[in-house]
Amino acid sequence: MAAAVYGQQTQNIVGGSGSIRAVPPDTDQFRSPKGIHDVLPPESGRWVDLVSRFAARAQNAGFGLVISPMFEHVEVFERVGEHTDVVSKEMYTLTDKGGRSLALRPEGTAGVVRAYVQHHPTPPWKVFYVAPNFRYERAQKGRYRQHWQVGVEVLGTDDSDADVEVIALLAGFYADLGLTGVRLLLNSMGDAESRPEYILALRSYLLAHVDGLGDDFRTRAEGNPLRVLDSKLEAWQDVIERAPQLTEYLSTESRDHFERVQEGLSALGVDYELMPRLVRGFDYYTSTTFEFQSMALDSAQNAIGGGGRYDGLAQQMGGDPTPGIGFGAGIERTLLAIDSQGDVAKSQKTLDAFVVDGCGPTRSTDVLVLVGTLRDAGLAVDRAFDGRSLKAQWKSADRSGARFGVMLGSDEASRDAVAVKDMETGEQVEVQRASLAVWLHDKRVNLSR
Ligand code: HAM
Image (tube, rainbow, N blue to C red; front, side, top):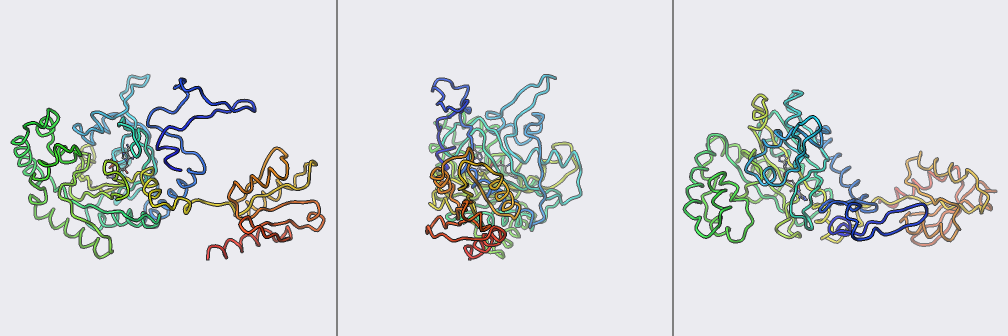
């Protein structure tokens, strides 16, 4: 189901005064742009479920929602790294009518840090977000030009327990979703003291091995050698594998911090694998970095979430030195990982009831009132429109996936009752209208046992 909507192009259908016509294939202007997809019901029901589970987890851990703008001054995003593909090749930039250079958000952290610097809230500032991001990437299944992330950021503490809290929150979220086959890779990028020494060593190693590996390799090795390490290019892997490792260059302080993070994760029972070559795609990372991968997805797009510390970023945006840590988790990729487990239906919200109007052509307000009362009582209820035939309404009830069909028939109405049909077994009972909401609630409780 997920792949049908955003894994490939589906044919767009537009409606016009009662008729439906397919858009002729050559009118590309009226299709979503390449790599950018609509999310429609019922697939979108899974998004609602995923986002509400994430929000519940984040709020339980003391995080509040932050909504940062979808575009910012281009300089905000340039801080995530001039030498990164996301900034140098993939950013959607624009000039507004006032001549300002703006860019669509390629990732969530920079805007949140900019907001922290601008509003100086009391630290530690713990926020979560649900937001679309835009990157001009080569579009394919699992890689889109607009993708969505749920994420958190914590600003104003360098306590290793904050690292553990953030990583464990993401691990717990995946567990809430029933996602299995996930591995957590962990690394430390060192601090301002340890990194320069490592970069020198790495650069001279890489420059000694440039032969036959192309201009891009040399440019990265000279400009920002860490960007060689996060390449997935097959031809480079041999050299990457034998490269010096950052963990060998950590300062005592960095090593202690990293050890405490590992102890904390182990104490919480969060499994991890140390991955010294894990260099994530932004220049702002310092100290702890991590990535969750789904073993069920293709290796080029198997990162379902990742993050780390960025202790220098606030200062680069003109703020006071402020440590920070967070993660972003791709919604589409997480759902693809769930799909590959084959239990797609599990997380969909189902209707408690579908109300069928059995009173014939004379229209009354009975259905409106009954549906309204049930919804006010907290039940998920739908109905048909347009005075459709009984047969057509029952067909809609069936298609809706509702647990019960509730029919307002004239016979039952004379007894202030309704006919309720169990849509799975076909069994039918009569229930008094006044007690219908309670009856449906009872069934919901019994079913969830
Ligand atoms: P990121 O690794 O670039 O990190 O993205 C986070 C997650 O977004 C990825 O693990 C992946 O699941 C998803 N994702 C990224 N690009 C795409 C794409 N083109 N199509 C589909 N899904 C994608 C960040 O964005 C950092 N801001 C994370 C962070 C927060 N670090 C610290 N705080």
